[in-house]
Length: 260
Image (cartoon, rainbow, N blue to C red; front, side, top):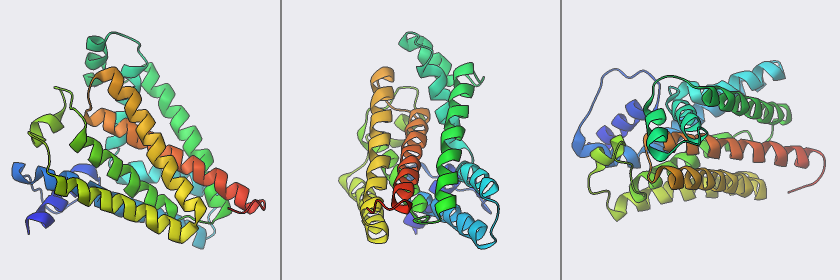
């Protein structure tokens, strides 16, 4: 029962789907984080299901691409997009660390956040347009959500937290090995299913998510001397974007005869 409660907490924390009631128990926060990839499976499933519905009704490609571009952010309650914008503002300010942390916590939206948001939507729309137009391997977008959140959950449990991070207070001494193994199994399972479903393309898309997430996290972790919710959201968005771009490019190559 405690595991179900932890999963329910994770759903309420990391997903924008309305829930009938609210649960919060400090003793279940580690379970809540470990269940993060499972929340990704729900978000990814809704994302994929929406894409299948749009293809079934023969919706215009441009409209389908627009809906699929905003769908994962909408279902997630825009929580990770908020972190992406805040981190972009702080990181691109090129200020000393103290000023960057102040900007990171500032609720106001700066110019760099708007610029990076436009770049994100432009690239994601282009990728989703190519994916929707080709119509192949669409289910990989669900795996992308699981893999990116597996990376985030492992980062929460393994990296040093910024003093200002809420996770530092919630997790205290950290998590046991069992939680990390569970997260790794979910992430590796999503990669394995991607390979079974799409072969080499599935593997390359999964690797693109992991590499994109790792590089993004490495950059901001080094600058901010720790990890926080905003930084995790930033890396998650970048990782998923890398996966979508890889899927779009590989699908285009596959369509034009360069079989993977």
